[in-house]
Image 1: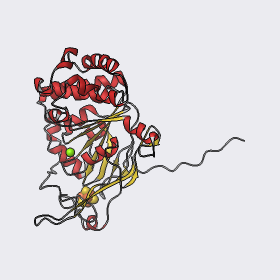
Image 2: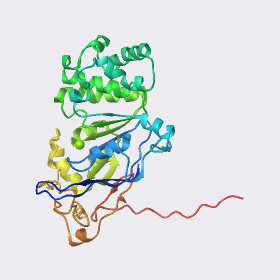
Image 3: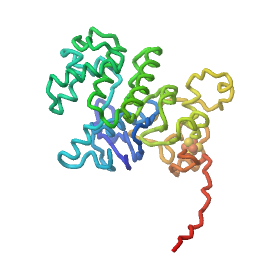
Image 4: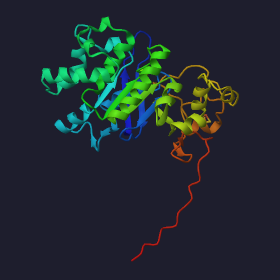
Length: 328
Ligand code: SF4
Ligand code: MG
């Protein structure tokens, strides 16, 4: 994703002013094959819009989204084929399954859309269901005959059945109880090892994101404020927003609990229709200075692939390398 922008024009209605909602405002990111990228932030930070941009459910207003080396919005079949290479798993498993079709028919959908004949699609469903821990006999059931956890497993089976390069999970475990969440996360990790699929894992739940991701991105009001390898991020988030998010997550380790700094998240995310000038986090940042209102911080390298957009963040001094002598 390179410089992606997505704004929505909102009409004034019933006393509410209209305007431009800046859902995603210049986001760049990269995901390697077989890698999981976690995206965290409160609701209203643009995570779901970013998800829709990545899988091609929405075209960007500016910037590009590419998959396997090409623009997913390239004209004709080239773009369409690339958009088919990604799938999305939504938060609400019940709402994402057609209530009037059998589970098997829903799971087979991506194959049927590609013109696979129904006998072969059925055979694929039978192979796919055990991979997500469901009995193949469940193919003949209706969605309402399954539990929430089973429905979510079925939606994962549907997302993976055509072997996409990328699956975006938008709050995919948020509606499940905690033991089921753990089961589904473990399942996703196993499937990634078997199938080599890349994941974007979007959640407001920092603990879940850290458990499953290789790299983490923190979004605030349509922008990326921090990105780091998951371990680095777990040990030392640098952006005051990321630190505050971590402080609002329960940590099982008392030593970690004591080591927390005092940054606490107060108030709500301001409206994405009217983001604060300069640093968008400044209205909630306990460390905001005069400079923060005037100048928007850019993402700067703190070393080891750790990028932070904050005027206070330590920036690694990259040693300048002398040009190497080229043997003639
Ligand atoms: Fe806080 Fe300023 Fe850093 Fe923004 S740039 S996070 S307001 S200290
Ligand atoms: Mg969302």
